[in-house]
Length: 131
Image (cartoon, rainbow, N blue to C red; front, side):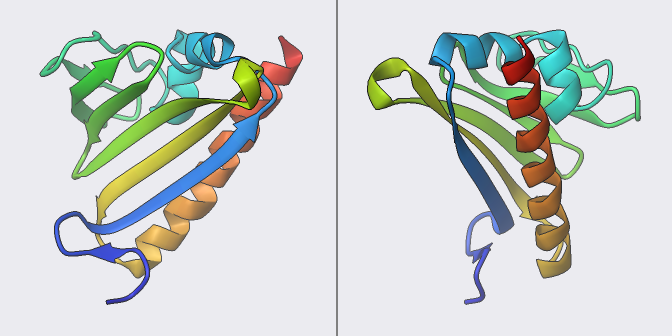
């Protein structure tokens, strides 16, 4: 089976980075309006309960599949499912930030989304460094 293709979730991509910020700081940003606008889309407002619907300014509609404060947010996003997850690292002074997207249409979309998520992590890192 090609890299990134799974039996259950189709094409998927995951991107992660260890950031030099405590988990609480990263979570506060990722779950804030500014953070949500970066990774989910402009004007996205999430209600932290399973089944809650949202819509972005671009018209993408989805629903919350899971929301565990200071741990992860999982949502549908159009025809895909996205997750952002945090894990403490280095004694709590650093945090591993992971973005994962599944049910992508093709290997080409997987590569496009790899570039997209790498850019999003760069933007999150830059925003956190400015705080």
